[in-house]
Every structure is written in structure tokens, then in C-alpha cells.
Length: 153
Image 1 (tube, rainbow, N blue to C red):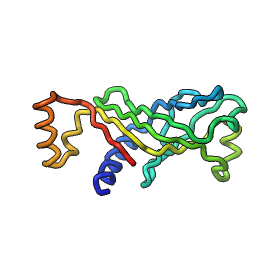
Image 2 (cartoon, helix red, strand yellow):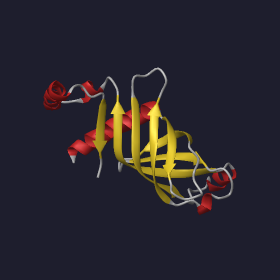
Image 3 (cartoon, helix red, strand yellow):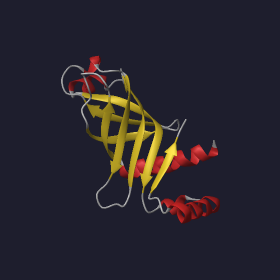
């Protein structure tokens, strides 16, 4: 479990650093949440990413409450990109600000990180010596891979 804690800490750092992502819901119904740019509120210790997204129209109550989605974090001028896949759910009744959120057509979502792909030049800095040896031999046999994948259970 220590490996997942280290991985989650790495992903939290990258998400908090970039904060802005493209949100896309993978819903197979006629009523869908729109693809849009979101700003991350927080990443909690259980691996959930919290954010608001817009929902045009009054059909937010008819949209599936749980669905798969992805967030694509990227910032111009950086050599890194983070794509996170997972199961998202709509949070209803989010406290005293619920009326303000309803009037502004925003809904609160939390998404469980199930898989993440990170591309960047700073991966080597995060690896311990055993992982570096493994990466070196893998690159010698298969060639360098700029993408680092993380799986969560």
C-alpha cells in the first residue's frame, strides 16, 4: 500500500500544481454533461478529485449520478501532461452554497482516480534507485517510454 500512497502523493502534487483540466464524461445516455475546462478544488486522501462543472439547462437532475470520466491536465509551456480516468459521481446538496450553485448551473463532482498516465521529463527525479535500474533495463530492451502509467484499485 506504501507504493499507492507514494503514487497518490505524486499525482496530488501534479494536480495541485496544474489545477486546470479538460473534463469529459463518458455517459451513454442522451442527456450528457458537456465537455469543459474545470479547476480542481482538491484531491483528498482517498484518491478523489473534487471539482465543479457546468450543466447547461435544467436537466442536471436527469443525468446519470455515477459515470466514468476523464480529466486531462495540461498547462501551456510545460513538458508534462497528466490524464486521469475514473468513476465520477454528482454530489447533491453540497451545503449552504447549494442555492448559489443551482442558480449558476454548476454541479459538484468527485472522481475516484482509477488510472493515471503521466508524461513528463521529471519522472526520473521521482524514482528510487531500484525503479531506475528497472527502467534502464526496460528502456534498453524495449526503447524509452515517455509515458508513466499508474493503476489504482
